[in-house]
Amino acid sequence: MIDIWDDTALARYNLRVDFAPAADGTVPPSEHIRNTAVARRFPQGWLVVHNHEDVLA
Image (cartoon, rainbow, N blue to C red; front, side, top):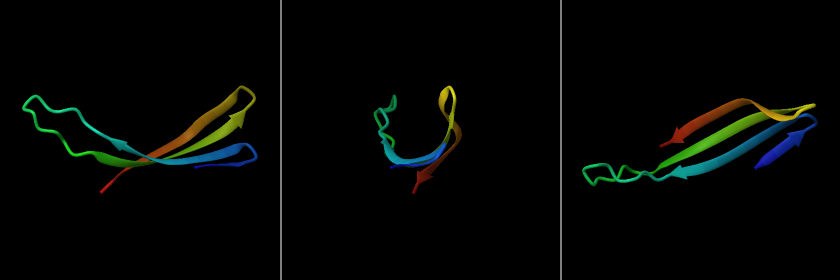
């Protein structure tokens, strides 16, 4: 989801990370991550000025 107010944007999304098997064949559990990014519009284009990430339990 992306919201834009004038020259500020807020992007929020969730993602899932699936890991490859380890050398011993075990597969770590997937992680669910919530990410929020704040961007500002400058004459050169958009620039992310803040990023926050949480691994959800």
